[in-house]
Image (cartoon, rainbow, N blue to C red):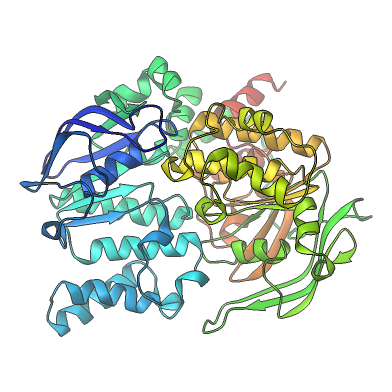
Length: 551
């Protein structure tokens, strides 16, 4: 199906090859996961197979055809489905209905078959409520769901996936993995680049790429049993395997959960939905009252009656894909104007600020890092904000070192990997030293070591008095940082709780339309048996360590 021999790819502005003498083969029905650290070459490999990258050396054959670097071959249309990591780049039409319809029309199917396949895709991917929405009004997760539906619409023989689940909640991730399983079982071939070990473990083979070379090619059991390989390539084991290693049984074996409980207690029903605070916390940074917002040509409405966010606090907004998280972030950042209500920053209506004044004090990291890229080089991009805001003192070198991009000064931003772009977006926000930061899916595209570094950065920001609002779907990342969880469901603020409480009772995640994470369910079982964890973390090693030390 796919044969690659001695593939070498170099990007303009790169000091080293993006891919170096890669040889690789994928047979019919194989499901192969591609993993590796940021900048290792995963996305370049996917684009090369598509024919979207010119190679300096080597050959690529797909379905028996030679791939000509620089364009997607007409021979592959309908036979190769592709989903890139940047969801917005694949949209061509003005709404979701026409986007899917265009794919089906181009296949040349009879009208009746088009209609039947359209209905099936809408049902399978729960697209009914967003069919008339424009791409600019969709969340990153919603756009990616549509891209997945379009990739499968042609019933292809090969699926090429570049981190397709980054912006999806657990429900849609599970849906995608079910589709991939059925696709592989039916004889389809899958090449799936991912940063999520929980996804890679489902593949038949895992190829580890680092510095443009394949450093390992084997089954998942071999990869996740090799501690040295994991460490050298910034990989971690799936939390399910980490749980089994710590507790001696699988997290799915619920009948054994009570074996780790120290004492029994009575089940306490979840009843508290909003923070019970006798006195308001000091240093309110952002204040929302009676907020309403709606998109034109959409039934979606965002409503928030009351919300206060504070300096020095790390809060998180959680909710299902399309619940309004990014919309709330854009409103709080002053980039959208509400239909009704008031947003204040440091006691002043946000619309009273000149944009330059606001950007010095209130920074936002976009869900899709490309939106905020200025370029052309990393240094140019990093210097744009302080120069535009007339800041006299800033230190590019220190910021690049902080976010793990030392030596990237002259790199062209378009040659950066998704993870490297994310690091640059974080650095571009940090360099102005804001009082409050809104981070929309800041962990997206980051490898495990870079994610750990980001956690340390956010913790230091909070300790120094900077307020942080996290928005995302990765509950395991959020649980390491958040002191408070704000839940959105269908555009309404449904709950506002201490993070420790939210992550100790599965009823809360279900309340805002999220699937219960197995680690939350485990924490809930501990709570029901009288073991109250004094932290929000979902890491098996953290929980096991506490239970071991508990008298």
